[in-house]
Image (cartoon, helix red, strand yellow):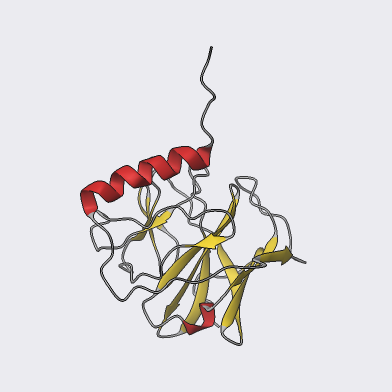
Amino acid sequence: MHALKPTRRELLVGLLGCAACGGGTSSGGSKTVGTTDCMSASDGGAQEYCLASRYRVRVPGGALLGVGEAVLLNVDDNTAVILARDAAGLYARSGICTHACCIVALCVDSRCDALTPSPDVCAATKIVQPAVSGGIVCPCHGSIFRLSDGTPVKGPARMPLPSYAAVADGDDAWVDTGVTVDPMVRS
């Protein structure tokens, strides 16, 4: 009898679990963003890569991110978003690698030795303070992206992570994966 082929999610969870074993975990003081009713339909255009779906993604507590903090929220195997804040405001990136369409991870330390685990569907990682110079890594093939503008700093990925519209709504934030924006747009 043949074993069932694992899903991409199961593979990534296993890989991230192995990466976390060697690099440790984030230390105290981490917050977790809760998730309920995480998405609605977007009025924006279709994405041009990786079967990414058009959603308005609600990030509960996302407007409360501090300067230098980021969180990754997974919608499904094709759509994930990163919400972050810098001194200029909130901004969002795709959480799907532009190389092989894997869900990325946030680096918990400046060398990307420790990664956030891949969250379940409609769930989020702990809020972390990733290095702006890197900050996002794809566990599938090792691409590293700069959090501040989504550009790849290490391949094999060559295309930047798309930047999405993000707006605060009370304590929450909404990220619209159907509306791409200039990487330097902040709200």
